[in-house]
Structures are given as C-alpha cells and as structure tokens.
Image (cartoon, helix red, strand yellow):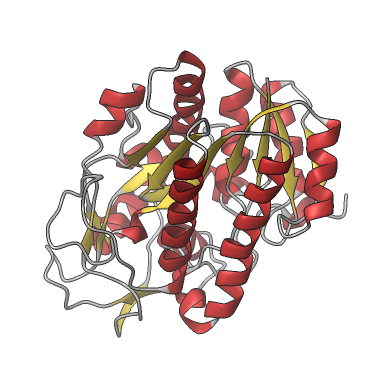
Length: 343
C-alpha cells in the first residue's frame, strides 16, 4: 500500500518512513525541503535497505498534488508538512496561516478531487492552550496561545467539517506532545535549518560545542524548579503511532473520525532535561534563565491511555533513551545533514 507522506523528509516524517517500511507500507514522500533534506531519505534507505520515492513539491501547489495522485495509487495520506516554531509563529502569523492552513486545505481539496479519503493529521498538544489541569485527556477544551497552535486547531476543525459532509472519510487527528530523540543508528535525527526553536536540539548544540549556552525561557513558573514542564516523547515511538493509526483504518477497528494524544504521560522540566542530557553526553550544558517567551505555558503533559485503548499504541522509550539517541545523532553529525549536502 502506498502512503503519501507530506513533509516526509523532515524530522518526524523521516522516522515515520522507517516505521512504515518496517510495517510493509510504501511511503511516497512529498516535501518542499524548506526545513528538511533528501539526505535523511538516503539514510532511511541505508537503515531499511529500501528505496523511497521522493517528489519535490509544496502542498500549496494543486497541480503538483494532482500529478502525484494521478501517478500513484495512494491508499492514505499522512500530513506532516507545515511550519512548526511557536516563537516564529507569534512573529509571523500570516506566514503560518498561509503555509499550514492554506496548504492543508489545498491538500484536502486535491484528495477530494482524486477520491482519496484516508488522512492522518499531524496535530499538536498546543491545541489545548493553557490547560487548567494535567494530565490532559482528549476531551479537554481546546484553545490557543499562539498562531502555530491556532493553525493546528483550524486544520482539525476543517477535517471535522469534511467528515460531517463526507462521513465515509477516515480521519485520525494525532495530537503530539514534544517529539525528541533520534533513530538508534544515529543516522537520522532533528536537524534545524537555523538556530533551534525546540529544547532538545538546542541542548545538543550546546553539548557538541555549536552553541554557547542554552537560554531557558522563564524560571518563575509554578513548577518543580520554576522552568516549563513538558511531555517529551521519543520520535521513534511517535512514528510507530502513525503505523498503528493506519492499521486501525485497515482493520476498521475505530470510528471514521478519531482523536488521540501521543505522549508518555510524564512531564519533565527544562532543568531536568538539561541534567539528563549531561548524563548522556558527559558534557556540561551552560544555560542562563531569561524572560518567559510569548505563547509558552507552565505545564503540559498527556494522559495517553486512550491511544492504548483505541489503537493499541503506547510509548516505550524513556528519558535516558531520548537523550542517549539524541547525543549519538548529534555527536556523529555535529552539523546535521549539511556536512554531506555537497557530496
């Protein structure tokens, strides 16, 4: 079965391609390479021994999407493509709504034209806004504290409206918490195109000597040590969640529209993450505590029990594996994919 993976050359997308290949699916990657590299796909081939079909394109290009659907018998779409930095979204909201929302609507329109009715959407825990309590279950009220989260919330609503109009569609809304880690081979991992926006690659950059120190945004939250608490999930576990979602469609074991949290159910503070990474790397992590960042919240972690009940998925990799695998990737590839991009 062929699966169209938009944004499939990116961090989560490339790991999901491995999970798909291992499960017997055939990923077709569609990516504009704005924050990704085809080298990641070459590494996926190295890991799995299987070649991936890659098509360079943007989800805002209707003609390119129609061409893909015409040339390939696509069973389902996994939709990762989108911009993902909370801070940048606050500064550039129009860019985020154009890329994420307009791009998604264009993709769903192309699916409708070509009678492709199965989609797994890469949503986010940011749709819960600033939750009143934790852990977070799927029936919590949704809101947003930043345009990135706003874009995810709008896309979820678009998909619900599509389902209301076309109940034969199969739609999975997967709300990720905080993906970290890398493939255990050290061959693929998170490779930000600029200064990292997420915590783990920033810590890794400091450990490997690329960055001087970590800026910790806010030290006065009502948490264990004053720094923000998040639910960090290993990207390999997250990737397997997409396979479980696809298999649930195949087995017809779920409703045609469902929403699940993909998280571990445990929160760690920024400083706890720093300490765990120091243990994994044997390096000191210099940091300074600065002002809170616009759009951030104090504490966010999942209740992932519904995903286990509904699609048989749960996270298996703990904090140390997250740090160990990140360090293996970063120390083996201090400049990410850039150092081999001209070979």
